[in-house]
Length: 429
Image (cartoon, rainbow, N blue to C red):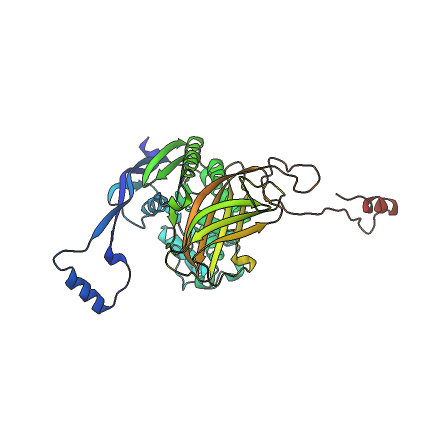
């Protein structure tokens, strides 16, 4: 029935014009000179369709997952659904109040406090003051920013802003909740907390649109899915079907040399050209759990020297778990003041800490907060099983989490009988 449809998208398209005048700011004299040179000819523009011929429906209470490579059009689609930008053609009809979390701080006034922004966002959602007050304590508790609720948001870290933004979007009772990959900013515990909240929102009969590269989360949370590729729907239907199509596309992408990949983000000052793993100085197809290995990122800098670069590698479980390993050169104190024009960045991992499974590998580089290059799913990596703890026992298959060294023991309480205390102290695991 029509009243069961929460979102209806028909023949949606979004076109951008890219021309020489998009290059940046100019002095007045440069603007006048450019106008004189091009008088009567007009600026040269190229058309770029970020979305084309998009059609789908989402029923009330359904959770839709949207997946796809960088540049596929996912964020553009969500911005249209959130009324941040208008489509060039077609339409998107949404029935109900929309709560959206697309990027850190979206919808926040940086000069206002966290408390004031909660009430501001509630007013935007057409909620009464009484409704906002009723939800206020729950929002603050979920975001875990109680001591800073009366601090201006501009003084929050990105993580604090993200926690508050999600909490506001999820708790102010929108009929439709739209969440972008921004959840990757948070730690694993908060990501799990957010996924649990989205499941609760769906059980309450509200609609969720969720974009993520974490296929395990998409499989666990979503009822159906859409895969976008080059601005068009490449696959739609059950979550399992769409995820399988996405994985197949990644395998196909791997036949391309990394330097040929066009689905990348960044200003191009640095470009990754190859990624591989080494063990004992030899290239290996896959690392083994518990064995030493190196990750090597080959790069070039077409625009000249790059200063103060930071590199990152992320491992995401393909499915069946939330295991994620994030490696970041800056947090380890590694400094790259000036990079050679071509080179290799090496990250050494003693005792590879992931259990046997398949993982996506995402890589990125930045400088001064500006993304230089970022490529998702450069590899689908198969990790071979190994004896991480040296006990002859493999990690349990259902516990697909990062492995860490650990030591277990038992200590008696003060009133423990002496014979039991002696027995306890002589045994440990």
